Length: 215
Image 1 (cartoon, rainbow, N blue to C red):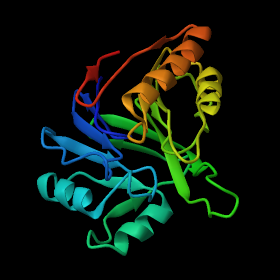
Image 2: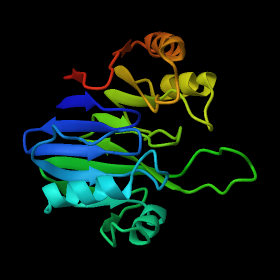
Image 3: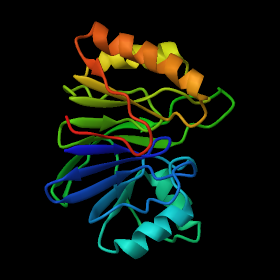
């Protein structure tokens, strides 16, 4: 498994059978270097995790790759120019596709404010090794080798990210959901996440856009 960090919350994962893409959104740019994409997972409907342009681009380049996401996302995509292309998944679902085993968890976006509705959100566990939670701090309740840890957002403070890491207790943590941070802010949040994962016997792996990690 080779994990490549793209901007913000987007990751691509290369396995023996091809590539999986998670959350190509408005901060991600066009993912020009992708090859042999076998599936796409979009955790929820907010535009920093998907755009009609990304969906259309990936569909055009990899027409046989299914796109998975929760019901709220499917409705949002169907109402856009991208059309009715999302295969709906929910917590408890599993899929085997392109050499990847995908298990879905969670169910709802973390609260931004009590006055704002909470949208559908699924976290995805890839091959029992990498967990990407989307915009949620609900873990998969199984051992995790690599945890993609949100470190910034209108719904998140750094102490909550630390508690999430300590609760999941992964072997490795990487930072995602970081586009709203300055470099100084990112370094601060990374330091806190690193301390949290080290406290449970794991290690922090620093990735910037374009960097890759093979656990």
